[in-house]
Image 1: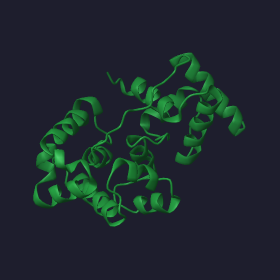
Image 2: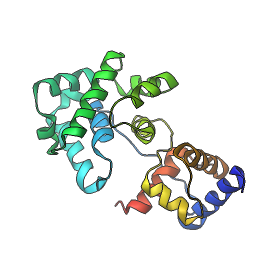
Image 3: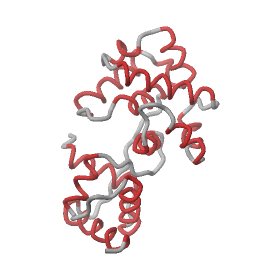
Image 4: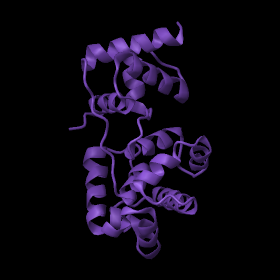
Length: 202
């Protein structure tokens, strides 16, 4: 079956299961500490119950961490694991590494990161951070308003239900992008609708 045929099959499954939309893209965050922590901490966790409340609390506790420089100053002086109420040295280390990379590249605000991620060399640099894979790069883009598809286990399950499986990350992402274009949906909006359905997000 051709890539086009697979994208059409996925698009048909979207219409059958989710209807015609429209599907709103995720709102993301304007607080860069929340953007970095969301990217670093969310994987394989119940997002609505575990991650989102912690990110809201972080923004209240650290309002000065709305920029990368402000967040960097905070985590240099205070314990991020304590602020997030989340004991995971590996995820804390990822958050520190992302912060240091962005600060070194002059990325300070949501708008800066949105523009910075438009360069493939910058995306490749982010991929070199331990704990950051291709899904995380697409995911952080959506958090700052880029329209991307971050393929996770929920999107894979949805595609498998349409009879599409055994595809690599980039192939499946491309199919979702083609399905979104075929249906006239925002890419991130379609991704978010599938994620909310399969993750049973409230």
